[in-house]
Image 1 (cartoon, rainbow, N blue to C red):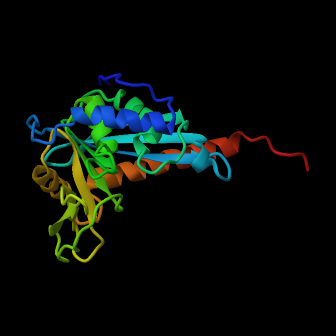
Image 2 (image 1 turned 90 degrees about the vertical axis):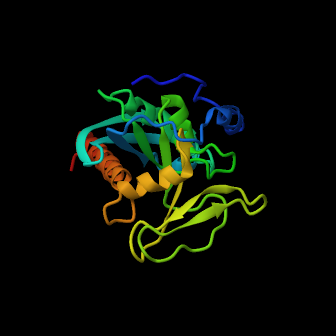
Image 3 (image 1 turned 120 degrees about the vertical axis):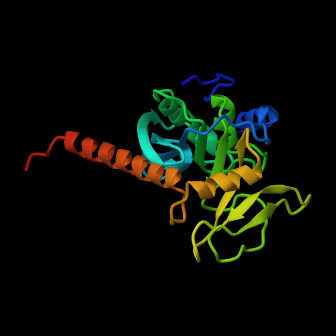
Amino acid sequence: MKVLRLHRWNVTPAKAREIQLELRGRVERNDRLPPLRRVAGADVAFDLAGPGGWRRGQGRAFAGVVVYRFPEMKEVERVSAERPLRFPYVPGLLSFREGPALLAAFERLRQAPDLIFCDGQGYAHPRRFGIACHLGVLLDLPAIGVAKSLLVGEYSEPRTSAGSSAPLLDPESGEVLGAVLRTRQGVQPVFVSQGHRISLERAVELTLAVSDGYRLPRPIRDADRWVGILRRRSTLSGVRRQPRRAQ
């Protein structure tokens, strides 16, 4: 897959915020999707280097992408990539922490997906440019952000039935940032927002289309499991490589 090289990744948090503000003008929030034949889920796990490594940006990032035939949701491909973790933990700058590994994984795909589901925010972001927007722009693909927790905005709790939703609103302007979506009866909702080349209504519709009775839609749930396996494999491999101490 082709990746647009629009900026460097080795930047300070202040420069990263500037890049987000510069690139958000490229985000399309209307439907411009091809016929959907393949959809993908993407996620990242970390193996951190000692106490405080999560803050300093030390350790390894393990990215995974799982692709399915749509609408059957039959898995057709999965890829992964491992990269050094260079960027520190800074709220609102998740894409600079996860992006290099994720893009390396996407470059390994034999066939590009028509739509990406990202574990994180899209438009529902302090600078309206979360990781789903960032990936969508750099890959020039439609993308949807599905987050497990709230980053910005306020909302009224949706009804308890599966498929119920409520708008996620900017408390100052009243702008709709996303949707609070109940994917399963009686469980906590997820936070859906536009990433790129998709309307919010269509993003909600497609999130429900790939949900299968669990809180997290299947592409994101499977990608989450996949990167967990990759991290554990790496940890076990490192343990095996350690020489035994003489008794």
